Image (cartoon, rainbow, N blue to C red; front, top):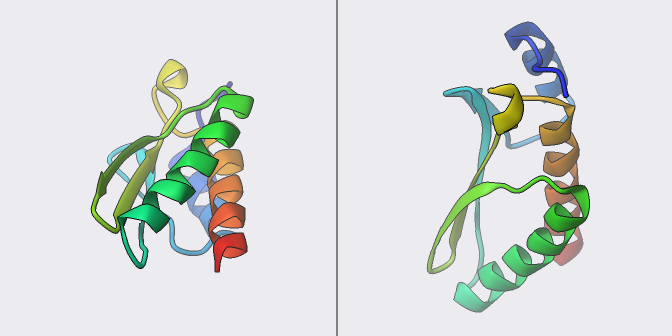
Length: 96
């Protein structure tokens, strides 16, 4: 997978809401009603990430979930990261 340039990343970010690029990765965060809701979404994301064989760096404290995406093998952001970001957004939108 080829690492995208900063210009390519910023262009692609125009098509997804709530994500930003810094520190060589895509980042977003979500807030849920409670821990159970956050963990439920994390579980659904985990299954999809496994199917894509691409796994997020994430942290969860109670009802907050922070996610970072980068392709470690490419040492930066690739199409794989945007694909997983879209999948995550679809899961979140379906949860509301």
